[in-house]
Image 1 (cartoon, rainbow, N blue to C red):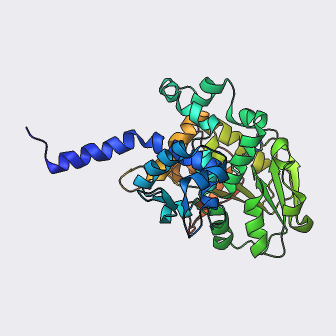
Image 2: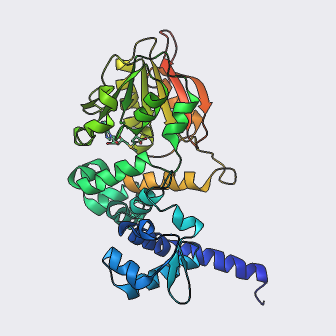
Amino acid sequence: MPETLEDTHDREALDLLIRGFQVSRMIRLVAEIGLADKVSDTGHDVPALAAACGVQPSPLLRVLRALAAFGVFQVSAEGQVRHSALSLLLRTDTPNSMHHGARFWTGPGSWKAWGELDVAFQGGSPHEAAWGMGRFQYLKGHPEEARQFDLFMANFPDNRHAAVAAAYDFSGASLITDIGGGNGEALRQVLGRFPEPRGLVFDRPDVVETIPIASRLGGRIVVEGGSFFAGVPAGGDIYLLVRVLHDWSDDDCIRILRSCRAAMDPDSRLLIVEQLLEPDPRRGRPTSYLVDTQMMAMFGSARERTKNEFDKLLAASGLRAQRVIATTSPVWIIEVAVMHSGSTSTDV
Ligand SMILES: C[S@@+](CC[C@H](N)C(=O)[O-])C[C@H]1O[C@@H](n2cnc3c(N)ncnc32)[C@H](O)[C@@H]1O
């Protein structure tokens, strides 16, 4: 049977998906040489750009032509390079810049783990198969990539930190403790909006020691290194767990939540900030399922979860969800309190 126009479109659509890795790898390449920041409104010829970036003109032209075919930069037949709407988003001075994401998704740690994705089908961790160690151990041994990861988390295009600060009333809190708080961006956003509370970033020692004094809001933010498997600091009115639980298996999540439970007073609140996975992919955002499979590649049994799945983890940890609050970002806030004595808990 001859191929219909629709068949041809399907073939082309699938072909581009199959070759998507080539595009994302080239986007990382141009992000790493800082190309987007060097392109101005007037346009440039490729040799000048190549010289500014310290690379050879011919391969740069070839990469830029391929990217321009996908709408990332514009390249004329004469080799003049200008920005497109998409390449402008790679500038580091653009609000919600995608520069950090461009460097992160195909960064070496992630790239090699995706190469071992088949290990996940046997219940293993692709990252462990690729690197012989867990993700956070790897980041500890690769500080440059670790800081890149922190920047990516702080500048993830979901803009979740600002969205959380806008969606929840933090005004009554004295101390907000951000568990697994990375480089402290969530607290900077919240404290920037609410002048009264102080903040504590609790994360791995190798992470918190890199938070510059200058970004601790004149001492309003303090840091503490440790592991949430061993315990978390007591005394917080509000605890944050932003995009932390999705890095872990159900059993590990329960250990983390029990550590939070042990630190909380009856009046403390824990805010779990995560995407809520839509089980029907026709209704969910495609990127949610990509984050879910990224968790599989990085951690094996870690994953995105539905609200019902979070409720089961909470019940097994002596906690209960009080409210679920939408934000302007794809993440939701699950406001959690300590379960009253006498309430039942369910095993996951
Ligand atoms: C996905 S990142 C989220 C960072 C931040 N909350 C955000 O949303 O931008 C997970 C964080 O958990 C931290 N983490 C991993 N293992 C930890 C542990 N055992 N104890 C405390 N923090 C840990 C990582 O260092 C990282 O900063």
